[in-house]
Image 1 (cartoon, rainbow, N blue to C red):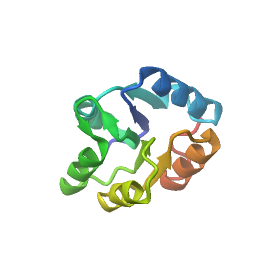
Image 2 (image 1 turned 180 degrees about the horizontal axis):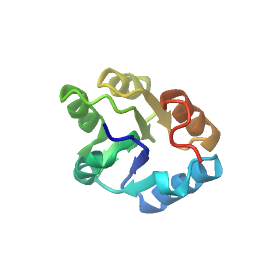
Image 3 (image 1 turned 90 degrees about the vertical axis):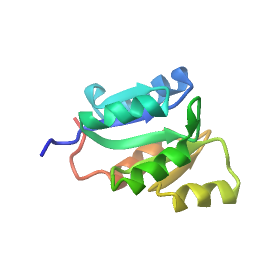
Amino acid sequence: MKTRQLILIVDDDAELGVAVAEQLEAGGFTGKSVTTIEAAEQAVSALAGGVAAILLDVGLPDGDGRDFCARLRQSGNTIPVVLVSGLDEEDDVVRGLDLGADAYVQKPFASSELIARLHRLLPSGLPMA
């Protein structure tokens, strides 16, 4: 079985994706373990590459991140998913969690919160330097 090491950031805002990757690296995650992409369809192909966790924006150019998360769960995929969104209503958060997300982080967020959630979701030692 392939060791899962990659943290996949799926966000249509390329600048934000790079900024989050930098925050994760500053928080102790290695540069090789963080990859950013801008659409859910790209995430499908990346899943074969050993993904440890997905940071998934709700608003993507090719669909709703919550729906993508639901499809992952329906297919039996158990990769930890953290939904990231500017939608902050209780119904938005609950819908995301009900569709299978392991956590929901509201934009703007503190990098320390995101890092703490990833540490909680990832097996000990992965994918830290």
